[in-house]
Image 1 (cartoon, one colour):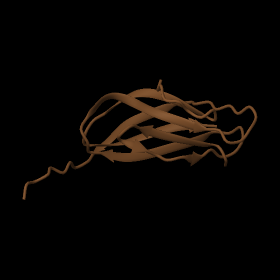
Image 2: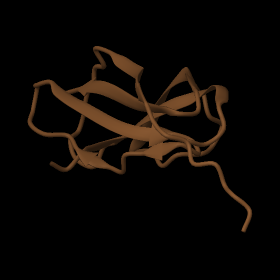
Image 3: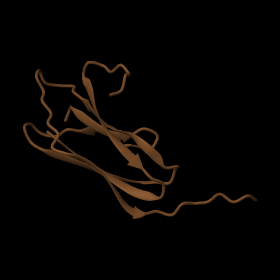
Length: 112
């Protein structure tokens, strides 16, 4: 868990993942338009805040990105929930996954 201080209306969930160079990654999160969720891998990807829709229902968030930086041994996939309305809000996560997809081209810098 991160040791950074968060405002009282935020909470984070972390999952250790490996990110290897040259692949497209997709990650999903399931979640229960004023509250929001954000998925990120530090230095790799950040979805930005996405609204949590509805009351007492499931929402699925899916993001795909290509990564061509250096491979990263286990790092943290972070889910940040921002609660801006509601007295006693509850969020349940059914699953979180990070899946390597197709290979992507890696540009090799050339000297002029």
